[in-house]
Image 1 (cartoon, one colour):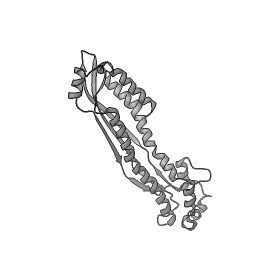
Image 2 (cartoon, one colour):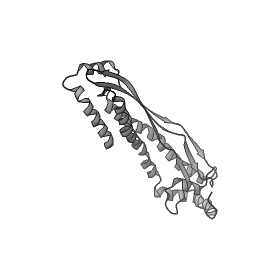
Image 3 (tube, helix red, strand yellow):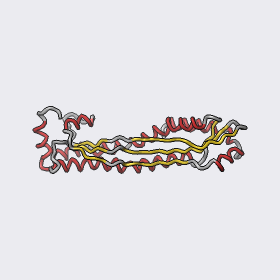
Image 4 (cartoon, helix red, strand yellow):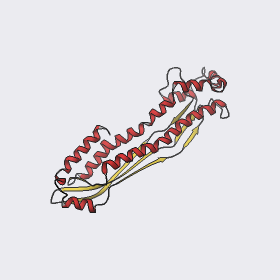
Length: 235
């Protein structure tokens, strides 16, 4: 996890020390035995995809934004990952010690909005070149869809390791704020970074060798179809 998360955990540890001195206190016993289990719910959602054949290769090249000079983008798979976290929990207050405990209830959702698969409008859907470009974009699509369960598993394991079905302790009036701060400063950046790791897998698909291969498939059909369009205005 990132350093900011470690700092938040240290803050919790400092707040908990007085309540956890020596053996289990009566307040700790009430918290651990009656407040209920902590809960971390994590779901990954896939919302399908659609194929769009209405955008020309020049516009797709601009949309991609990272094409090398002289490189044309013939197809593009676009989406963005989303993370939502809802935080709550049952509180128990001990007026005598000035502490409270909270059993965190955390719901995390990882999802993609509907993914759009573009194939340049210069290619007729019945053409060999269209099918080759579409097959390439299907590799991108399947990488996104296949990555989500792996990210979910890693995040779930990290959440379980952190909270371990134990309540968290803090000074009275501070537990919910500390928990929310840990989520905002530690868990949200961590989960977003886990979701972003899919982009390295996507970049590996778009290798120079793959682009060179696509330029030669179907007996040079890709090059012959693009050549007449290069003197036209951008689509």
